[in-house]
Image (cartoon, rainbow, N blue to C red):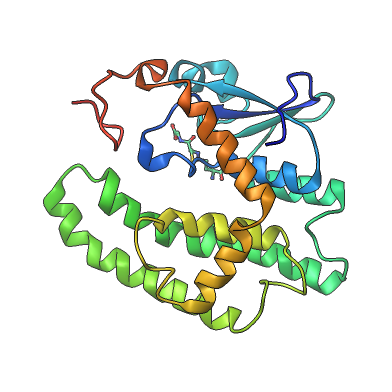
Length: 240
Ligand SMILES: N[C@@H](CCC(=O)N[C@@H](CS)C(=O)NCC(=O)O)C(=O)O
């Protein structure tokens, strides 16, 4: 695993601990993955709800979320899509050389975040976050129908392409494959052979594997107490 350089000029934020269902899912993995793809060093600042709720952090990330990217002499960036695009443009990596393909890769970056992620997230709402289990049960079939629709459309576009745009893995593949992790606890992606194969092509990349291993290793040394939660927090993050 690539070591994290505590003196690196770039720092990203991540959460000290999350429940098992979210480990390997927290969105800082997108930045770790991207940084490893382009070969940039970075340090990680692990934060907890006290920091998330502080006015200092809200000035960096108005919603108190992770990740942000801090770099001396530059504005602090938030929103993983914007950060990935910034890194791609500055490093000259993970964006196609061809101008038309470059424009298309940006379309797919936004499509991942704007047209696919919100629909897939509804399944997490039904499965994990809705407290009224009856309401969740009633809502889930609709959420599944909408997710199936989008993933079917994505599969239709992908066809027998190896990558979403052009001949190489790009930030569009990075973001879209990361977005499919939202439904990793279902077989909705596996319902489409080409989609599952493309996702696996993304996830077999050493940079992805190292990013996930790194995030999960940080959770090892922490627990619910580090987030100010009771030790009885269950695997969904609910306190008993
Ligand atoms: N649209 C944002 C979403 C960031 C986000 O949802 N972060 C989650 C972790 S995956 C978070 O910080 N959740 C804690 C919270 O909202 O308090 C992005 O892509 O950066």
